[in-house]
Amino acid sequence: MKILFYGAKDYDRLYFDPAIREAGFDCRVKYLQANLDRTTASLASGYEAVCLFVNADCSRPVLEVLARHGVRLLLLRCAGFNHVDLEAARSLGLTVLRVPGYSPEAVAEFAMALALTCVRRLHKAYIKVRNNNFSLDGLLGRNLSGSTAGIIGTGKIGVAMARICRGFGMDVIAYDSYPNPTLDGLVTYCPLEEVLRRSDLISLHCPLTPQTHHMINRETIALMKDTAILINTSRGPLIHTEALLEALRQHKFSAVGLDVYENEECQVFEDCSDEVLENEQVPQLLAFPNVIVTSHQAFFTHTALETIARITIENARAFALGHKLKNQV
Image (cartoon, rainbow, N blue to C red; front, side, top):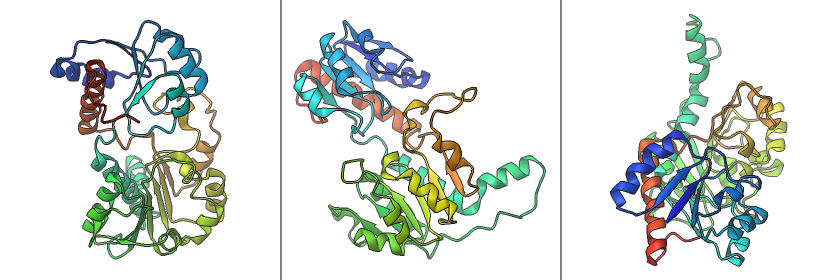
């Protein structure tokens, strides 16, 4: 099998080359720094499979080009697939395989790290001390112990986050359309409105679907405490950014930590330090002293990258050998 990697970074090669050797999988791979879009899709000519991450353009026009050039398999080296036009993929005969879970703990731990950084002003403290300023002005924080954590979405990552919050001595409540039985005795499930009203820390861990798109909006933000901490390590469009900006201007939220945000595709994972950002909302968010924005890095640990590489190659091998495709979307 010939596999073309789009949007590949040095760390992808570092983890995928050993995974291919360990699997004993007879394949030829090529790593492209360029991401998949209408202008690069034709580069897949002669490849049976392409390997993609969350920021690839998998719209119908792009998939049509891939199919026309002989691509039969989309290997997603990620769990989310909201960026893939699945109806188009099916109609074009393209099989889509994903990595359903690579390290729930990595994302949950990062979500808590964001919350702690926000609530204890660690980012400000670091900058102050770097400038030889050891005063405590502006660094007053809050205890998480004894407060209420609201987990929205209790899949594997939400479960990991709930357990972390319990370890911090927090009362944990949660909302999910399908309650997770593994959390019996650990969390209390409540209606979404109640979770938003009661929670001191609100952490989003649900997939992006038509039902969850902009689930955090003007109406739902109004339900939250003015002192709430809002954390999103899931998908950017879960939050209506304009509504969030309006709320921040009105001094809503003690802190906001965003590892993902709307319209991040044009800059995510790229060095844009010498460019003017196309996404105007990011500079607006960064103008607020109680907002932290990071670079979609919650997944980014050795454990996660090893798992992503291993499962992606297992998916490719299963497809090539005609085995059952347990990770098909």
